[in-house]
Image 1 (cartoon, rainbow, N blue to C red):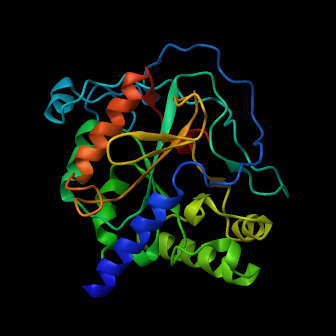
Image 2 (image 1 turned 90 degrees about the horizontal axis):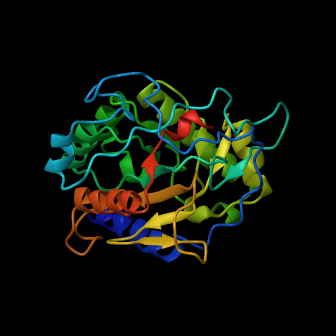
Length: 285
């Protein structure tokens, strides 16, 4: 119990220190010509409301339950993904997706908080997100995330022990990344294609290690969700098309009494207030 509390405190304190502006500037990613329409298109699955597939529009009643307005359906994914690692090329490092559509991408890190109400919330709202999971935070309960995987949400790599990778040797970085690739594949059936370095800290050895571990992209962020508000990297303090948004699996002890579902609902409102909807990151990378 003491180890679990200490881990939660360490992850939370580190995240609060680094979210937002501490990530290194990402390398440019190859992009296809972005779509020109800003009007949301039907869900790519063509499913009816409440279909259970992330990205499909949930029912208005489901949104009302959580104090939200329904999101517009995201546009259909591009025929060609705008971020692709070329043969023999370095792993791209991204903090946004090149697009003109008013979409953003949700990512949630670590995994320390395991609120069953959050699983229910995401099942009912059908808003897609990608979870970047750290073994040290979830090794006692990988099963908590299985229903989220079954709902269709993405699983990505956030290392074994959440170190600052820049302080490690190339081989130690490889062990952190490849080790978590193997664990996540064993638990959920598929090796992750996406990786996020803890604190957003990386160097060229990180890119090389990620490439040898089968990673297709290193994913940073443009905005991070705090307790009640977004923290922005840009001076204009607003969302831009294609931005990647960071949040964490946190509970009342880290959120000053608020729950994971309350924080998530607030994050979704902040996105809606600026006229954006949420798309699935794996459809673009």
